[in-house]
Amino acid sequence: MDRRIEIAHITAAYDAKTVLHDVSLTVRAHDFLGIVGPNGGGKTTLLKVMLGLLKPSQGRISLYRDGQPVSALKIGYLPQVNRIDRRFPISVREVVASGLMAGKRPLQRFSAEDGQRIDEVIAQTGLETLAKRAVGELSGGELQRVLLGRAIVSQPEVLALDEPDTYVDKPFERRLYALLDDFSRRAAVILVSHDWATLQPRVRHVAHVNGTLRYYPAEEYSWKENG
Image (cartoon, rainbow, N blue to C red; front, side, top):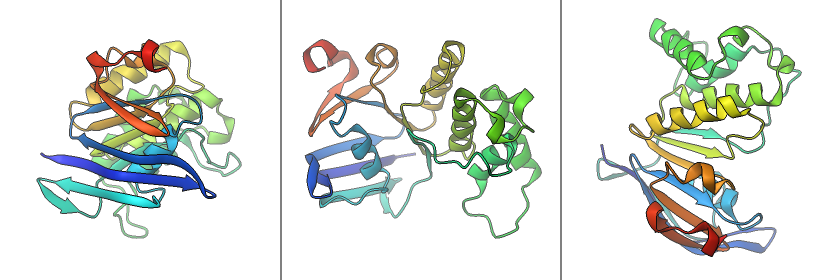
């Protein structure tokens, strides 16, 4: 299936301060795009523009499925800073399940198939022993895994992650990237990171962002020359 996000000549600003200028990029199905660059260079801004979370001041964003323009693609998103209220009495399983709520009618029950998918994702993210625990009891790394589960449970067409290994320990970091490697065979993965050494073996393309954008096939990118 041909799915893609195209952004053309995007300029984006916060409080009248331009962060991105004249940026163009296409992300296709099964791509694994690494977004890298210095702090403050616009990595997260680019991701938000691509996902429709930030309206650019100039330029165009277009989405396609099977060669036809569409108004939306199914997107899973793990932001850099989670906004979940730890005081809210909700369990790990319920947070993961909330990733399936889009498109359901109010009060519509989850199907048996939904339940199986939720169990599968809980296992993939190593949350089996925490499934009934309230999110307020979790460590930062455990919560990050829960929010990752919420992002992937709907089997999105595009999975976007902003510094997904924040707070997680090294054993789960390896598991995380193995999961993303597998996911990129079915969907596009867009990952913002400052850790080029971790990204290098797996990304297919690199967007180096520092106000403007330079785009490379992964094998042609040099962190030393661009960092």
